Length: 563
Figure 1 (spheres, rainbow, N blue to C red):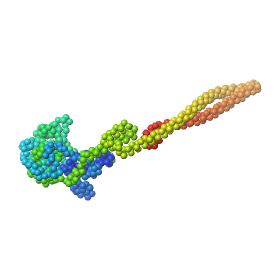
Figure 2 (cartoon, helix red, strand yellow):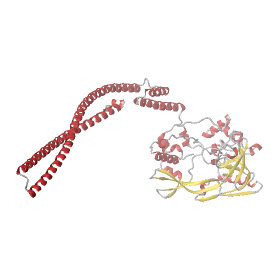
Figure 3 (cartoon, rainbow, N blue to C red):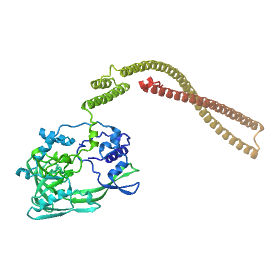
Figure 4 (cartoon, rainbow, N blue to C red):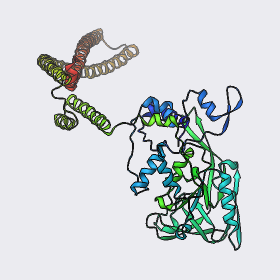
C-alpha cells in the first residue's frame, strides 16, 4: 500500500513536470486498494535533516504533520477530496459463507461461532492439498525455518547459483537471494513477470507463481506449475534476469527527472517457497494454504492470510486461533465511513457532464456554429435539464440583448461602409482626373524634350557652319595679309556675313535657354503631380485595408463595441 508521503511526492513531481498546480498536475488518478489489509511499510529509520539524528519513519511523518501513514492522510489526497467507492463483489472467492466470514474478519466483527468455524480448519492437509500447499506465516524466522526443514528433507543432487552484482546494489533491495541452492522437487516462487510475445504458456509467468523444480542447468531452470486460468499442468522455462539500482534526481535547469544506474543484479528470479510471509503473499491467490496466525502482530495481517485462499476448505491452521489476532486500525475504520454512495457519484458525474456540455454549447454559439450548439445543448439536457432554471433564463435574456446590440451595431457598420464606399468613389474620380492631367503633361513634356533635341542638333550644325566660315575668313585674312589684293568692299561683305552668323547663333542660344526654362517648369509640375498621385495611392491602400479590417471583425467583437 502506498504511504502518505510517497503519494505526496508523486503529486509534487506531476505538478512540476506538467507545470500545473492542480492536484497531481491535473492528471486523473484512480486509487485502488483495501485499507483493511496490511498497512504501508514504515518500520525503518532515516536521518532527520533538521536534527541530523536517526529517527523512525513514523516519528518523522508525525513531525511533518501527517495524522497516519495511510495514503488517505496525504496532503494531495486531502486537497482533492476524491470520491470513495466500495467494491462489493469478490472475484477470488465464490462461496457465500466464506465471503461472509471474510467480511467479518476484515472489520473485526467476528462472533464466537465464527472463531469456532475457523478453528475447525485446524487439521492436517489432504493428499491433494499437499501437492501445491503453501505455508503463510507473519514472521521471517518461521518462514525460513519451515523452508529449510522442507529443503533438507529432499534427496538428490544440489546445484548452487551465485548472483552477478555490478556496481552498487545493496542487499536490502535484492529481489531474491544472491546465493540460491536448489534441488529437484524444491517448491519455489517466481519473483518476476514475463510475457511471451508468441503467447506460449511455458514462457509466460507471473510474479507469485508457485511451482516445483523439474530440471536445471547453468542457463535455465524448468518449473512445473498450474495454469491459474485453466488449472492445467504447465512447465515454465526460467532464465536469469537483471535488475538495476537506479537513482532519480531532479534537474532544476531542464525541469526533468534524470535517472542514473548505480548498479545491477543478475540472478534467477526464484526463491524457495514452501512458506512465505503474509506480507509477501499480499495480492496472490492460492488453492491450499497452511496458516500460522498465532504470532500476527499488525492490523489486517490475519485477514490478508485468510483471504489468499479461494475456498474455506483449502485453509489449514497449524494451531487454533483466538480473537486477539484480529486487529483493525481505528484510523482506517474512520476513513471507510466516508465512503460515497453510488447515487451521489452518479449525480456528480451527471452534473459534471452537463456543465461541460452546456459550456461547449455556449462556446459554439459564440463561434457562430448553431448546429454544434444545438447538439451540445440536447446532449446536456439528457444529463440535466436547465431549461426552466433562473440561471438559464437569465443567460438566454443576456444573449437576446447581445443580439439586439449586435443588430444595431451591424446597421451602424453598414452605414459607415456605404459612406466609405462613396468617399472611395469620389477619390477614384479625382484620381482619374489627375491621371488624365498627368498623361497630358507627360505628352507635352515629351514633345518639348523632342524639340530641344532637334534644336541641339540644329545648333550643332550652325556651330559647325560658323566654324567653317571662320576658317574661311582666316584663310581670306591670310590671303589679304599676304597678297593685299582683296578690296575693302569684299572685306566689308565678309564682315557683314560674320555678324549675321553671330546674330543667328545668339538667337539659337536664346531659344535653347527658353526651352530649358520651360523644361524645368514642366519637370516641377510633373513632380508635384507625381507627389499628389502617390498621396492618393496611399490613401486608396489605407481605405482598402480599413474596409478589409471592418469585414474581418467577428460579429461578437462587433457586439462588444470593437470598430
